[in-house]
Length: 158
Image 1: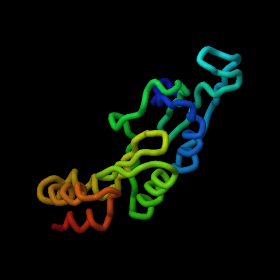
Image 2 (image 1 turned 90 degrees about the vertical axis):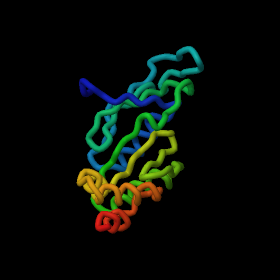
Image 3 (image 1 turned 135 degrees about the vertical axis):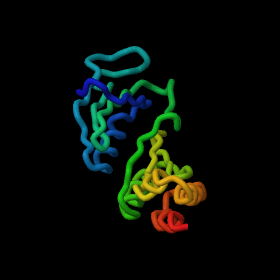
Image 4 (image 1 turned 30 degrees about the vertical axis):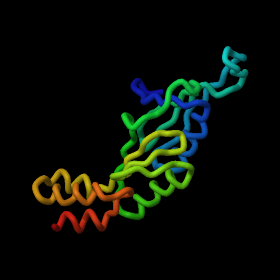
């Protein structure tokens, strides 16, 4: 396990979430799955998954099955940079099509409530360019749900 890890709280589906991420994103994998050695207060049973070590696109994470006390918010999100529309669509459709929901400006949530920014490189490059190019790309982004690479490219040109 890495010295510094993103810890994500799930009700009871940390292992399912980790498996989905490992199947969806390159450089992602499942690591150790720790199970309860005995029954525990609150209805927990021996063998229940307590934590799951996993990586998402190379980022080390720990999923904790902590119950329903805390929910995910947009205050935390994974940002996945994509190279083209095909890659953008693949990740977006995997997340939204697997019980997730669309948001705006390239944001969506998976079925566990974790927020994702599916961000084509053309958008970040346009914003980094500054000036009118950034202004036009930003305006185009504000009108989109899933980012349309061609729309951002056109906006960059004015």
